[in-house]
Image (cartoon, rainbow, N blue to C red; front, side):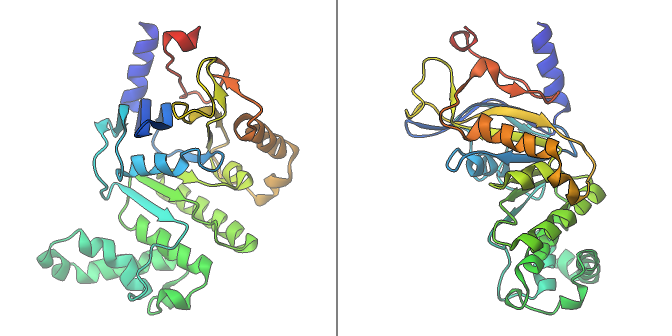
Length: 303
């Protein structure tokens, strides 16, 4: 009863809540028994081996796909189709090539308004878009088209495009994956500044463990490399689970932290826990040290 009360309280306080969530395509299980509670304002970095289902989980949160079974709530309500409460930024810049920078940023406001409101609030929409472009230091480029901008500049426009809609949850799928190392680090600092300013909840998918640890207040390791003592790891019924959940410092910090011993040791532990096919943690031994992490097991798994 105590555990159920705790889970109920967690479900009520969480911005994003998943319990026993599964996603299958036919007989193949992609995500198996995902348990996750995320509170407002967290910056969650999601990492895991290629093909483990990170982007699938992101699509479920966005509402592009639906869970096969389990409880999945956003703001205490069942997840519905995509809407303005969830913004997304992809690796390939989500900009329309035939629109200027300003037109790309203001597009969401126009599309979410009726014809009369769009006309009546034209100046307000313009001024708000320009304010965002000033924040990302691109106001002087508002008249340009995407192809005239560098990769980092295009991604700043894409982030502004998402933020202007004031989403409760910002989803990011490898947003800096196509950038060179210098630009990528600059964008990491920029993103942390935006996150601290707007107090948004961020769900950030990346293959780069250094980036994940530097950005996140929480690291979620999703992996198909685990054991319950009865399921074939290579079988279609296995699927990926959250095998580790680590809390990190909440404050944005200098990039110098990337050179610290603790930073490197955590990366090595993450790599060991989730990326080593020879290391199969049992479900009862997952490293779920974040205070909001939980695990629901059936009788056979609990042993």
